[in-house]
Length: 461
Image (cartoon, rainbow, N blue to C red):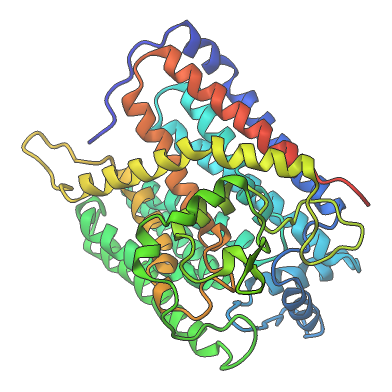
């Protein structure tokens, strides 16, 4: 359904509306400071560090601007960017500098989400709560800092949502053409950043079919198909053909994670509430086993929740030796334990909003009064987010080492989870009519964000 006209705001919402803009900028600045501090303490060295470092080194040895390197399942976007940074700055610390660029790009993505919130969420309190929550989600802070392709995909994904919405709202032909060009470029940038962005191509086609009449002429409709479906689709095929037949990160067919583990909780999931780290050890069969990596001991939803709300790989923890798996002190262990438990309402909200909006999308037909079951913005965010998420989650039962290699980590579906979290606050905006309830949501978001920042403020050499 279309968003109804807002009621006259009360004193609480009016006061927040007056300071909303500086508050949003303060949130963006605060999250950037946390991430810049992490870079100073070498926390850009995260998952698959050796692979990415080697590939970036290979890229800078190529003649500019032909810095095209394919390593395993990693497209060349990240390595091209690092070579560009090296070329421009001439710095030997070009990887750290590239991570700083990634932080800036993701702050821009947060700003775009704030802009989308203005279009979708009526109440200032919930808009601020949404941006505050998105900004300080632990897995977002970590994996938009770490030198890896996950960080590079967020901005193109967010721009695709924004530009798609703008395209279907525009009525002037020249503006539609400009938006088509920009949207096509964002799709290409996303695909060269992370292969799973290819999920945006069929979604774009489906949305074009839904909103076909909003494009102003047959020529623009044909151009939309070419620029948003045909060219990105062909580019995706070319990218796939360039993937090496061997190398790090390649997946093989297997049946290790059961479908039950994808959709239903397991008895051992209660262990997640003590915030175990990735290499959590537990006695078993006469030897130490890695608890979280045992096939089908824990469910995918539980492990996803754990990796969203804790530093499960200890990337932002103090470590003078820059170890691949850093240690975690008792204070931060306690803080993460509180975080993983207190974040349960947020995970439930994300699931509820996604399911409800998916059910409403089934009724996405124009009714006799001209309204829709979902507003275009909600439908667009839902479609791109669910497709990106399904592109990983629905293949987990067919992947080798789904547990052992950490394919359950939230970083693999980072852009999608940001979109689904955003929809959770859109849903709250529909439900909450009492200012006190909205104030409680804002207070919860602020407390949870402060908690996350407390164990993600990197210390040490």
